Structure formats: structure tokens, C-alpha cells
Length: 244
Image (tube, rainbow, N blue to C red):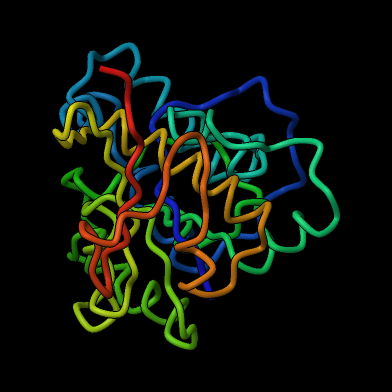
């Protein structure tokens, strides 16, 4: 079983640094390609001003020279979803569960464990970068598929940006978790609800060491409970009742 997480744009550079990262050939190829791009062209790709683009160019050079400081992946990423997660004072059982089952899908590093060492970078699958004349999604697809092809259960806490890196056959096997707030009989969901729900749900998955769908449906966390009427075989919905 694997639980898949997206990356986040926000990064916490005050996190405790880590050992040097082990990088795949795919990661090396991306670094080599992007390190050749000028700050001016990076600014166009990133749609940012030249000064912050220069900082990104320096990061790519540090990655190329293997001089970049690295951090445990889920400590470096610090978006809203990640800030909901319990990332310290873990028990041995929780650490073991995370190492065995919880993985991040990265446009630079591939499918990596939450504890794997990575360096700060700016890259996602919606940018127009190409590697070997392929989009990043096409470049990574077979490697992403291979990372989960032996897993009987694939739990997706991903957005469509990350899910569609996988082939259709893998996507069809995913069990997607969705999060909804209900007020006066009206259901509401948006990115904030989804991001908070994903992080809070991961805490519950880890704490209960969930291994199957039936146990997953029994979870209650931060006011969320499984809702059968809004769920299907491949879409599991949790609803949180809000005060009127």
C-alpha cells in the first residue's frame, strides 16, 4: 500500500538540514537541463521578476554542483497541507508506517519517501519545461507507474496535477480521498478545505496504521467522518458538520 502526497510551493528553510541527497538519473537529467537556462529565461517560465529568478538560477547551479543544502522532504515542504501534519515526536511505529507507506510525488525527484533528503527548488508539472524533448509529465510517467505498480492499494491525496502524471491504468486503481464541509444541509469544498483535510487525514492514517479501505472508512478526525452517500468504490468522501 502507498499513500501519495503532492509537493508544496511553500518551503521551510529553517528546517533541520539533512545528509546529501541520493539522486536518480532522472533527477540528474532535469538538473542538468535547467541549470543551463538563464535567469532571464527562468523568469519567463516561472512568470516572476528577474531578481527572484536569479535566486532560482543559483539554486539550480548549487544542485548541479551537488552543493545544495538538503532537508527531509516533508519538513522542507511547508504548504497548508503540510502544516496540518504531525511531523515531530513520532513513535517508532509511526515512523515505520511513514517509511513503508507514505510517499511524495515530485517533479524533480520522482516518487520519494517523506523522509528522503531533497534540496530547495522551484518546479512543478504545470511549467513549460521539457527534458529530452518531453514534458515533465511524459518524462516521469513510466517511473511514477513503476513506483506503485506492485501496490494493491494506492491512496491518493493528490490534486489532478499530480495524478495525471500516472498512466490511466494506474489512475483507475487509485482510491481518492475527498473532504467536504456541510452547513445546513449544503455541501462545500474548496482548496483550503481539501488541503487541511488531506493533512489531518494523513495524521489519522498514520496514528491508526490504516492498511485497508474498511478501516479507512472508520476514521474520525478533526470533525470529519466517512459519508457513504457521497462516496463510491474509488472516491471516499469525509464530511465535516459545521455550525450554522
